[in-house]
Image (cartoon, rainbow, N blue to C red; front, side):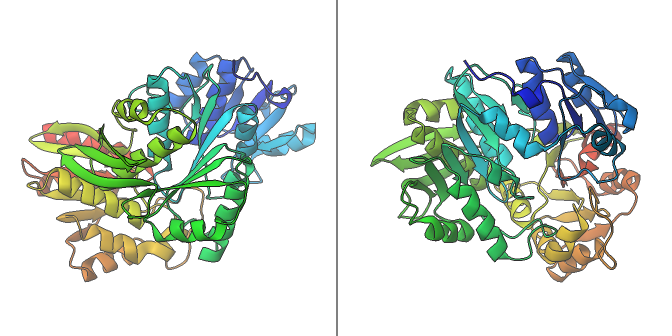
Length: 464
């Protein structure tokens, strides 16, 4: 049986309860029997799902939403200090708990797998959650996106395994004590919190140092940042290190990846034996994620051939190359990619899956700080598309930075030979794409903001 509810979490109040990370924790607590409440900026399907589990969800933020008997207030790093519910918590002397501490408390007493990396976390965590569930192990899990199958980002299972997406953006992944940790890649990102690669490495080293004695680090043997991290932690005496990838030195070696339309067939060499399985999403990036999941499951003692078969049941995560539909002979696909490496991986995957189709991209940059640091690389990635539309920057939690606009990306894209158009009004995208798209084309909406809303609108417009 999985543990119950930590005392501080018996009546939690979540500020921003509709967020991907926050809602997952709230769902698990609700399923464990906690009296969950919270608020969010707008109504959503997530809010309705939480209410169906018995949670109280307020829309908008107001001091009166916080009940006097709340045992804690849960916040993420995105919550500002002047939030009225946070100020009310201080008046009532109600403890404030960071999302990562709340998640860590839910893992207590369980065999935790923490999935970290600059990108690929959600997909890899989801692959593990699906595979372990398919094998009847009934894991608990908390993911930064909704599974395409179960349609949820978190669940409370009765098994002894907890799979969690471990967020490095604010160093919160340092709160966890996993039995197995996966590091997919280490790159410079989250520029508001990290000033250099040395700071990034230090943060990941701290995360790896929290693996329980005798535990395992599963780490890429191909990605340069992950290789450097492995070198830095190699001397930790209580740590088992398992590398994976195409490198000849990898412990779990990727022998071959064969594209099969929108799926891939992956063959690995593990303990001197060949093992082949299917990954139901296209591209080598996602194939490597599946191999990382395989290695992590094996580290927990699960037979490799069972895991390989179960991984084939994974059907994707919402917003990770998710097919939204087809209209007028045009397929519309949605991608959460917002870092240049992710963008390149998804664009190359779509190129490989539909090499005879034109690829049109609607890209919305995410965060001013990320655009300031990586805008040129984003523009270069867009050169992989036949044509792109670039929207204004989605600010999320950030205030504007003078001089930082989508123009940084557009100029770099044009310099790389890309066909790119700036569109400042989201509503105008529909006409622009309708004028560009022809039967057989692929349209990819890309970014971590509300660009995802355009997919269904583009389909409707093309149908009219």
